Image 1 (cartoon, rainbow, N blue to C red):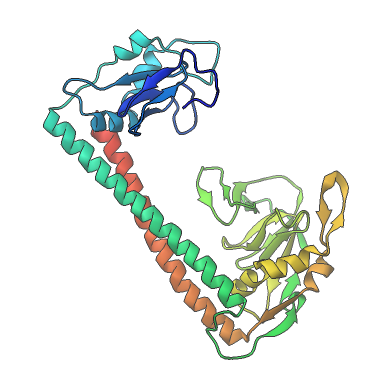
Image 2 (image 1 turned 135 degrees about the vertical axis):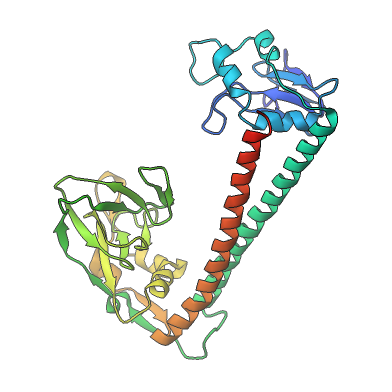
Length: 338
C-alpha cells in the first residue's frame, strides 16, 4: 500500500490479486508473493509486479503455491543478474512464462482447503502456546508478590548473598569444552540450533574463563537491565570472565533466580548502578549480594517450583505439537507442488 501522497503511476489492485515484491529477505529469498485480501481496492508501487489468477486456476491454490518454494528454481535460473543484490531482477514476460503444473480444479480446491485448515490449526496452536506463557508470567508475578498464596507460611526478607556464593576463575581447559555466553534474548549456537540458555560454541583460546555448572546463577555486572541474568540450564561449561558466577546453596535455584528477576527486586539492584566508560555502568557484586529479597522456606520454594514445573511441562508439550505442525506444513508445501 502507498504511504506517499504522490501516487502517480501506482497500480490499482483488487481482492484476490497478487503482488510480487522483488526485495529479498531471509524468509523470502526470491521475494514474497502475497494475495490482496481486502474488499476495497488498493494501490501499490510500480516497483511491484501485480497479477491475478484466471481461467482454471483457484486463487487460494495459487496463494499456497507461491508460499512454497516450488517456483524458486525458475526465478534463480531465469532471473537477470542486476546491480542490486537485495532485489530479484526478472523481466515481467519472463516471470509470466513460468511453467506451473496445475492439477484439476477439484484437486486444486482440495489442496488449498487442506493447507488452509492446517494453517488455521497452527495459528490456534500458536495462540494456545502464547496464552500459556502469558498465564505463567502473570501467575509467577502474583505468587512472588504474594498476591496469590500457594503456601500459608510467612515470607521473610534475606540478603541475596545468603544464598549466592561467588565462584573462582579457572583457565579454559585444553579439551574441546563448550563455551557458554548468555544473551538478553537467548542465542543461537554454531550449528544454528536455538538455546534459551545462551550461545554455545566451541573455543580453544587460552583466555581466562569462569567455570560454571548446572543451576549456577549467572549475570553480567555491566548494563544489567539490558544484559543477561538467570540460571545455567545447560550443564558444565566455561564462560567469559565478564560474567559473575554464583553457586546457590540453602535455596531452590529456580525459585531464587525467578525471585531476583522480578521487577521490584531488579529495581532495588539497579539503584546501585555506577557509571563507567562508553556509557555503560557497573553493579558491583557486593552491592548486588546485599539486596534483600522476600522468600518463604526452602520447602515452600520447592512446592511453588513444582507447581510451575507442571505449567512448564504443559507449555513444552504444546510447543512440541506446534513444532510438529509447522514441520508438517513445510513438508506438505514441499511435496504438494512438485
